Amino acid sequence: MKIGKLRFSTWLFWITVVSMAAYIGYYGYWLMKGQPKFHGQTLLLVEVFIGILIASLPFLIEKLGRFYFPQIELVFFYIFLYMSIFLGSGLQFYSVPFWDKYEHVFSAMMLAGLGFSIFQGLMSARDNATHKPFLMSLFAFTFGTTCGVFWEMYEFTADGLGGLNLQRYEEAGKLLLGRAALMDTMTDLIADLAGAFLMALIGYLMMKHDPSSSRYLVFKTKRQNFFSSYYF
Image 1 (cartoon, helix red, strand yellow):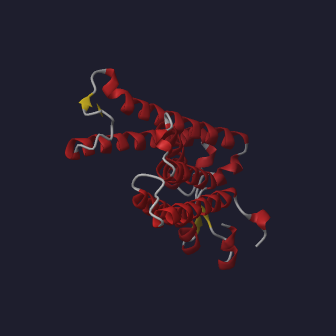
Image 2 (image 1 turned 45 degrees about the horizontal axis):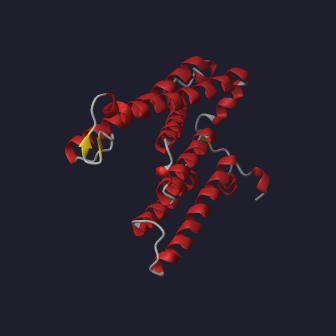
Image 3 (image 1 turned 90 degrees about the vertical axis):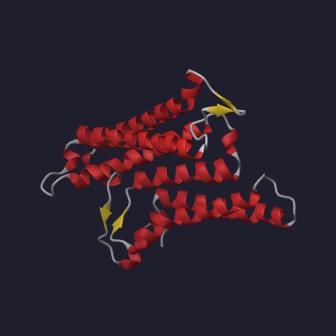
């Protein structure tokens, strides 16, 4: 296998997996010595290990399936995974101001990227969606934003049923009032909208400049033999 043939998403995959494996080794060592570096270290180690499994899923699916994931989709998938599990949970970056908002932006970009493939799949075989970059990008934007709305609906429902405070309507045991009570939800939605719009704009400019670049935005059927699947 030639290194030059590795896709950019493959480099992100290995960076993610190696970082998480190193985390488990280092912080697991200190946990076994009875000197955990973070509160709830055991749970964090389990979460990071699950992150490795999640990172490997696209690789395994591509090996077993008959298609390749969109390149841009994989790029934002690994960026989001690295930010949320390795940095956010593992290294406690959630203490960084607006860290969860950055995650919302990248998750919306990832979901909007999936919207391009969905739009292509909804078109008839005789109608090439890449000839309609604006409609394709508009659908991607709408899909990414809608997914963000559904996530906020989930948080609202979970807060109501389980009192989880996912929407940060409570602080230090006191209910927030007025605009403060809406701040977390609205900034999440704004971040989702911004991320989806950015991805839709990127996709539109790519297809407008070079229609063939749509291959980075949609699922691609395999035409190589089994051994060439190392191209992942």
